[in-house]
Image (cartoon, rainbow over all chains, first blue to last red; front, side):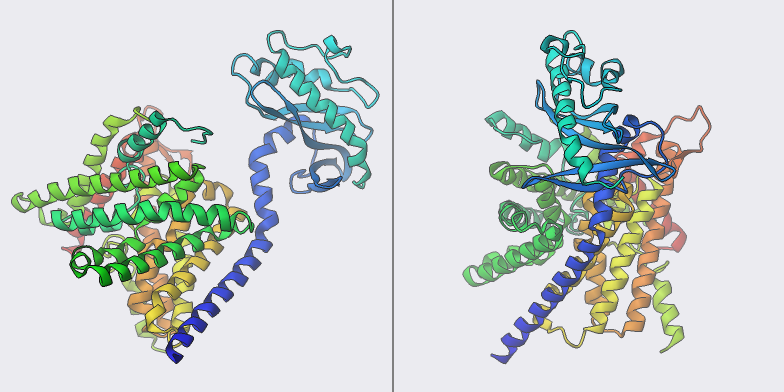
Length: 190
Length: 199
Length: 200
């Protein structure tokens, strides 16, 4: 009986120590791993939507809580220590599924740039909108007051012909993003 | 290979992919240590094959359960490595115990391979692939079975060839493991003929 | 503390008992992770870390581990260090982590840490177990790196991702594919036997 007890105690001790040390290492590396994963996913988009900056927006990312469950990861871009813009991801529903867009705004709420991060649009058709610099640059300069919508819906954005659904999805994403801006800005110190 | 609905032909392709196109041993590199040790004779090769097929087809789904009902809900997916290897070790230990009790004859034929199978990379590796490829429950069973089948196929082909080596004049420095590896490479090259059948 | 014995245990892993050539163990990563020098060296380092740590810990605890459950205890120890390595590479060497893929967690079933635990660490004091682990680990790293150097330079034309071959060079891409790995390793092993004057 003592034999079996000893076996159980030793094994349990091993597993407990193992579990604790692993939990510790996991906590210690969590941030860094998230940084690496994000860097792989969104670094090109972050680079594309801001004008020149000299910090590391992904490293300095801030998690902003909106409402009960929603958390938005905001990437701040700075020049000389001063905040020149914030970027975050928003989503619209496109032809093949959700379209994820990186939206960058200046502290005054003017759009600095828009870039599509992930989508499932048809190559050659929907991608005429998602990959088009011309289409995406239409959003630049628009502020909180302007109506972000396609011309067909009374707005100022011209859709890419033949890629209306994708154009709508992107516009929808940007518009949703604009709505979030004030809430997000509140929780970030300049 | 993430799919919502699997048709019969999808399963067939999965088997072809696992056994031939992406042969677990010759293409994915898993299971090499016992491969070279056990493939010298046909009878040991066949014994190991049956052992692997049995263990992997059972353990694949079991570890799938562990992942989806234990690790994911409790957000401890980083413990995957530990959880899987312990599951495999415990399973093999239980099986060894049962076989010993139930059929000493079977134990003599098969039982000695069981501890070797625990540390066989292809078992743990296939369990990882089941998760990485995001398979559902049934595809997991099929893929595990197909991988084991592929392992066995490569092993038996190898054993058949190596038994002939007794009659070949091989330079001393290439004997045994060295020529075994080169042969494995050439067999693997022939499996490339299947590339393009399935992804 | 016998310095001479320390040297002896350390150096045997570097030539006479070098894995995977003399001790035919740990073949899977040798074949899979040597397409580039960075991957081969990285894998070797990961395994060395796990091997040294587990050898030390198992040697320290060798009087406490009951014999009947020793394999289970070894597995827990090795797996713990493997997960630590996994998390650390993910955090600090992300491209390497993506390249090595499932082979980092597969270190747990790599015959080298478990094999050395069973054959050496459970019977020997910490000082020598450290030497054994370090020697085998560095030997393994050297093997992997040299195989990787060959496969990268001739199979891809690069070294550490810098192009170093002349511009008309057509890479022998067979070396980068699985069959090439087998053949390459087999030839290297044969060569080593030739130089070393036969195997044990």
